[in-house]
Length: 214
Image (cartoon, rainbow, N blue to C red; front, top):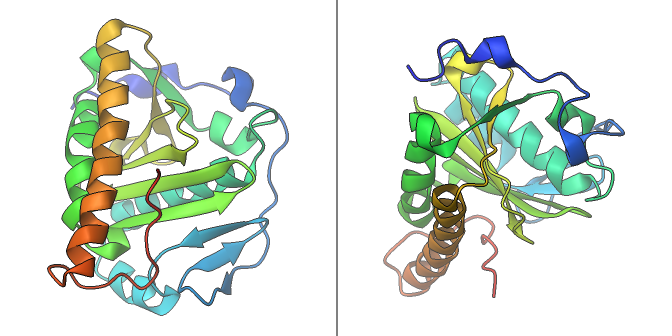
């Protein structure tokens, strides 16, 4: 596995630049009319909480931990301001290069397909003052988190081996920039295709519609 040995390079709370600063204290969760849940100052729009709990019952402990980490990262990014960032996110990052990390390449390649045709429980968004942040789960493999709107280029990938940490794509090479831009474009197209297929009855309706950036 490419991530073997990566734990030797874990970044502490003070090592992630603009993602540092004030930690977010999460409030009590509550159901929303749209089938999502509210936590602190932001909203996560997913399938109903009871359905999520039933689905999680079939996951092993590693899968549950990875999914919960990804959704916590998404909520933190959505509710933190761009200026202040989130200490929680900063403390979980392991910076990696695109060309040397297969899991990041795999997640960026496959996530748009999951967004288009995947189970609704595997795709969700959190919304707050930091914008709209999406999380996508590939069962047994990875979870990816990224700002959907506004898109900042941040891409976080969670894998079971890293437990309570995630990989941050930290690479300014032309190859990496092109891959990130292509990833976001394909996700937006996948969201449009999903909405179109639902509208014509080719896919079942979502409990809460996923946002489609202009």
